Image 1 (cartoon, rainbow, N blue to C red):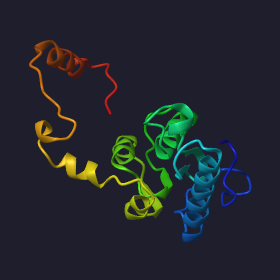
Image 2: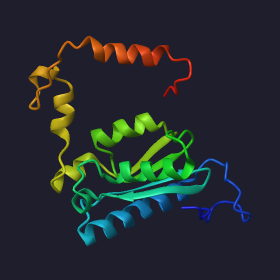
Image 3: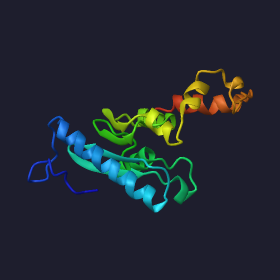
Image 4: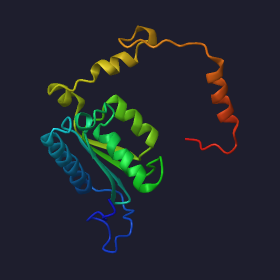
Length: 177
């Protein structure tokens, strides 16, 4: 991941110029290539992602749900994990995330927490639904009260849980995010 982006300066210094349409296309094509390679190996679904910061690719990923028996190993999650490890940070402020397809609700949530500058995607969630990856039910479920969802969630009154959260909030040395 330490290789400078070809569009960066010859010295390999960070490229602080705004990404161009050609930059977006190049990174999206790389995400599509990762999707093709991973799904051809049987690693998981046909999805790939690339994280770019200051003109440098800092993380790449492809869907590895099948290969790792991990339902969270979506392309965007894998790319974010790798980018954060590369940068030594749990946030991707200023980064651009390129995905071969519009992120699913789980990946979108993770991306919000990672705080990149922008998400770029090629295919839409409607395209994904056409080939068996239909997340519309999750979007529908999120709008329902927790106890009316297909996967019901029930809140249990446990003051100790709230106490732990309040102690964390009162700690002046905590890392907020």
